[in-house]
Length: 379
Image 1 (cartoon, rainbow, N blue to C red):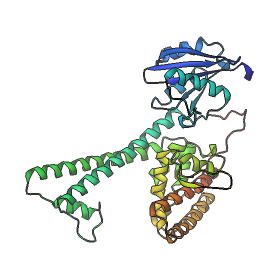
Image 2 (tube, rainbow, N blue to C red):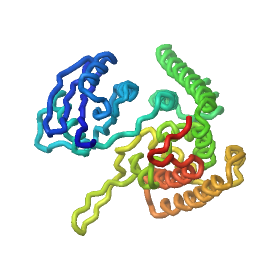
Image 3 (cartoon, one colour):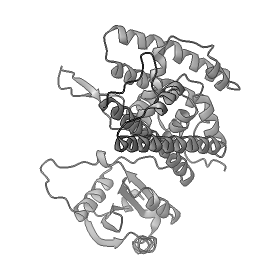
Image 4 (cartoon, helix red, strand yellow):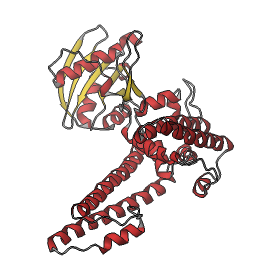
C-alpha cells in the first residue's frame, strides 16, 4: 500500500494555504491556493480521493497546530515539519509559496523531512500558561533594569551590603525622592509598572499551581518527581513537563540534550574534530529553565535542606536515589569546572546539560512505558 500513498505539502499562512501533491507515479502537481479556513481545507482533502492513502505535511510556525488537529479529526495522517531541518539547495535564490509547497511534497515523499512532536489541545493550553508566566518574568526583569539604571544615572546607589530586590531594598526604593517633579513622575511610573508586573507574576504562579491539579495523573506524578531535584522547583518542573510532554519519546539522555540545544556544535572532517558553542537549535524555553536551575548547584550538596525535603515527601525510593545522585555529582562537577577557569555561564550551561540526564532517568522511573506497536492504550 505504501506505493499508492500521495503526499500533500502545504505552505501555511494566516489567511492562505498553498498546496502541492506528490503522486505515486513520481509526478508533482501544484493545487493552487486556498483560504486558511476549516471548510476550504476539508474540501481540498476530500476531493483528493481516499483519505487513508493521503499524507499531509506542513511547516511548524506561528499558525500553531490548529490545522493538524483539524486534519487528524478528518481522519487524515498529518505531520508538522521542523522548518530548520528541511533540505535546501545552496544556489536556490528564489522563494515563493508555490515552490515551498512543491518542495515540501517532494521531500515528504522522499522521507527527508523531520516531524515535530505535536501536543494535544489540553497540553498546548498548559504550555501557553507556563509561557505566559515566563513572559511576565522577562517583563519583570526589564522593569527592574529600568529602575536600577534610572537610579544609577542619577547617582543613587544602594548601600553597601544590601542585596538587590529584597524587602530591605524595596523599602530603600520607596524612600527615594527627586527634587525635579519630572524625575519623580518617571521614577514613580517605573515603580508602579514594576508593582503591576509583580502582581501579574503572582497571579500566574497561582494559576499554574491550580492547573497542575487538573493535569493527567501521569503528568502530575512527573511534575512532583522532577521537583525532587535541587534547583527544579514546582514552576520549573511544570515548564519541563509542558515543553517535553513525555520523556519516553527520547530513546537516550543524549537525544533529550539535543532537543534542548544544549549540546556543542561540531565541525569535523577527517582527523580534525572541532567543537564550538552550544547549538541553540532546540527548545529555547526549556533551555532557559534548565540553565536557571543549574545555578543552584554552585553551593555544596545538602540533602537535608528543608524546602527540598518538603518537595520530596511521598516520592518513591527510585526517584529519591536519582535526585541524591544528581545533587552529589552536579555540585562536585560545578566546583571542578570553576576550578578549571571556565566562565560562570559556561559552567551553568554544562551543568544544565548534565541535569537533563537525571531528568530523563526520573522520567523512565515515573512514566509508564509506551504501548507496543499495534496495541491501543485505554483512555
